[in-house]
Length: 68
Image (cartoon, rainbow, N blue to C red; front, side):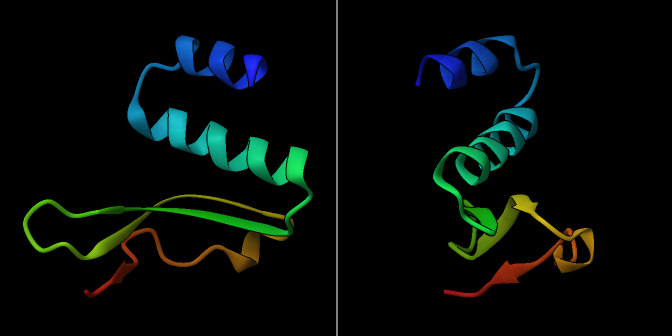
């Protein structure tokens, strides 16, 4: 947790924080794929905001949304 907190403190944007968090979860917990979704304020749809995967071809489109 201290490592994550240190990285978060040095981040310059929310996107950077989410990307770091996804990569750290993947690395430290051993998951093959990690995805972070945030709810869109207007619609409530989930928008893909960060991913960490072993194979870059597994990354879905950047504007991927899951409707409510």
